[in-house]
Image 1 (spheres, rainbow, N blue to C red):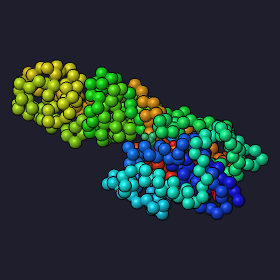
Image 2 (spheres, rainbow, N blue to C red):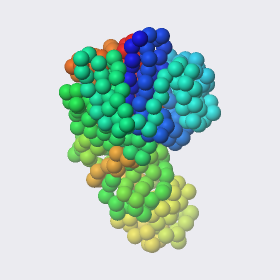
Image 3 (spheres, protein in one colour):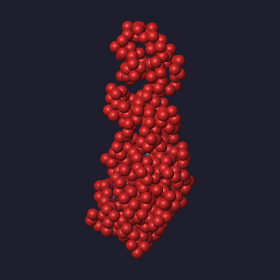
Length: 401
Ligand SMILES: Cc1cc2nc3c(=O)[nH]c(=O)nc-3n(C[C@H](O)[C@H](O)[C@H](O)COP(=O)(O)OP(=O)(O)OC[C@H]3O[C@@H](n4cnc5c(N)ncnc54)[C@H](O)[C@@H]3O)c2cc1C
């Protein structure tokens, strides 16, 4: 009988535990520092858990060597992950954009089936056990917590990344793997709200709208995305901003927002002329009435240096064209990102070049495995991070048999 120790009872650690426990030769011990396993999972997808994405491909992943994901994703593509969840009793629903959610629309259902499976497969779950150190002596692993010492023949480190501090993101995984000689790349918060010049966003706090978001470094387009954006006290957030946040986190840059992505400039201009005809005595701050959120309309007027309290009838065609310009290219300088606590994922991590992509076993320490976010892999928004957590966890658990 072989003992497999797993550090971290998050998505990848639970998948690894179930995979390892599928072999009758393994005794599996899952060590989790929080009071219960899967705490972060409950917060995913705004409590709905976007557990995978059917359009998963290696291009959705980032890291110094992003192709590292390929063997795990080939062994466990989304269809197989859904089949695995189905075998645990979870049914799911696919959205038109490929995102998959539990049929119940609640993340608790995903955690429930995992917890029941851990129980029925005999995995010894030790929650409230924070691993302080791990070492390898005489071919065996020795893991120290505040109150106990655990010995094992194989060790899987699934301790996650630093993102989502309030739901369990810590640096422990990087430190534990570094103690075995592994190196860590620089880590950044990703899928995170951005801080920008605050002049305009502060007045817009809470406003949500649709936009085409482009991130520029000088005149070069660094990243772009379309979808919902939300203004915050310190800048801007929302799914479309998350998509470019990884690049902004590393390179900074300037955001350009197009609030009329489906309409050309000429059409926005024509709509503004119509407003001037319909409401000549309205204030210029209402130029976008019927088109955009009222606060956003006023802020665009200010950005175009047009006095919001002036009258529509006093605006020239040149003024209206300028308003259309600003609405289609509203610029905000990125000054930073929110903290790891507000981030959904960590970009960077333990160097993948020091692990075998086929087995996830360390090239430095035989019998040591790593999976999930602790490795230098992060995915786009849309279920790709959990897909990596499940796939890499199942792979690490399979090959530690
Ligand atoms: C708010 C939020 C929403 C998200 N939504 C989505 C989504 O909808 N879809 C998606 O694909 N991704 C989402 N993500 C990202 C996704 O949750 C993570 O990428 C994924 O959980 C990583 O899995 P993991 O097992 O590597 O790490 P985690 O799930 O973070 O698990 C690591 C576990 O290790 C434990 N641990 C750490 N140190 C120790 C130690 N010393 N001893 C014992 N245990 C330890 C932690 O307590 C934790 O339970 C979201 C993240 C956040 C923060």
